[in-house]
Image (cartoon, rainbow, N blue to C red; front, side):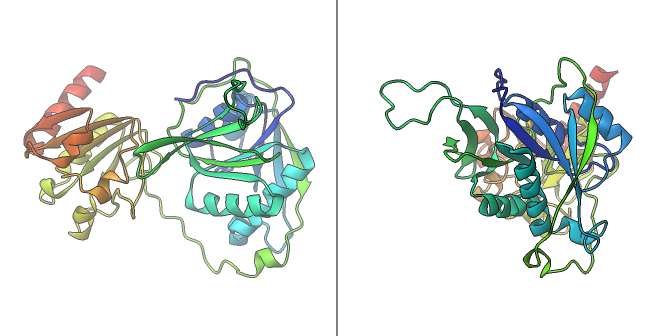
Amino acid sequence: MTEQTTPRTNRTVLVLLDTPATELRSSALELLTIARGLGRVEAVTLEAPSVPTLAQLSAYGVEIVLQAELPAAVRGGDDAHLSPVVAEALAAALRLRDADAVILSATFANKEAAARLAHLTGAGLVIDATSVTESAEPGPELADAPPAGSLVAGKRVFAGSWDTSCVVRTETAVFTVRPNSIVPEPAPVAVATEVEGFAVEVSELATVARSVSREVHERAVGGRPSLAEAAVVVAGGRGTDGDFGPVEDLADALGAAVGASRDAVYEGWFDEFVGQTGVTVAPRLYIGAGISGAPHHRGGMQASQVIVAVNSDPECPLFEISDFAVVGDLADVLPQAAQVIREHKG
C-alpha cells in the first residue's frame, strides 16, 4: 500500500477521469487519493461530469474540474477518445494550470495517451506504477540522489518478480497507475467542486486517423467487476474440465471478477484469460483453481497481494508462489468456501 505523506502545498497534480459522465470507479478514486498525498488535486474530463461524479469529487477533496472544450469536429464523438486528442487536451490543461504531474489509470488507451503527452511536454514518464510518492532527504552517501520532494514511482517489473523505484528528474511527471495500488480514502473534509471549461486546439496530426466506429464491450457480467480492475479475482483452468460453475459461484460470494487460464480460453470454456499476453492483474486477492501455474499465467498475476491456489496436484507450480495452498478437488473445495463466506456475511 502507498503511505500518504504531507503533500507539497505548491504542487498541482492533474487526474484524468475515465468515466465522468456516469460515476467514478474505484480505480479513479485511488488516483485521487494518491494525488491528494502529493499536492493540490484537479480533475480533467473530456465530457461534462455527472451529479454523482461531482459528489464523489467533493468527498475526495477536488475543488476544480477542468472540462475540455474540444473543436466541433471531434466534440461528442468517438474521435474525442483518440489517444492523440486526449494527449493534446491534457497538455493544454497542464500548461493552463502550470501543473507538476498528471496521473491516469493504466488502461491500454491511457498508456498510449500518456506516452504522447510526455512527448509533447518533455515530461518524465512511468507506465504501470503501483505507487507515487515524494522522495525523502537523501543521505550523504547518495551523491547523485534526487533532491527531496522529487516524485518517485514504485513499479513491479519482470512479471512481478522485482520491485523498483523510478525517480522522475524532469520538472513535469506523467504516471499511469495500476488498479488496486491503494485503498481509496475520502478527504478529511468535503469541499465545493466547480467545473471550469478550457479550450483545446487539436492539431491536424492528432486527427489524421479517425475513429470510424467504437463499441464498448462490457466485461463485467452479472454485476461482477471488470477483470483488469477487480480487487478480488477467482480464475479457473484446465482443472475445471470446462465447468466454471464452482469458480463463478465463489466469485459471486466474494464479489469478485472471474478469469481463466489461457488453455481454458483456448478450449472455449471462458472468454478472458489472465497472462502475459492476456489480462494482467494485481488484485488484493487472487484465487487460482485448477490452474497449474505456467510461466505465462504467473507473469500475469503474480503481482497480486495475496495468492491462493486450489489444485488436486500437490506438485502444482502455482503452489510455489502461493500464500495459501489447498490440495483438493476444486469441485469440492470451492462450493464449501462459497457456503462459508455466505454464512459469514449473513
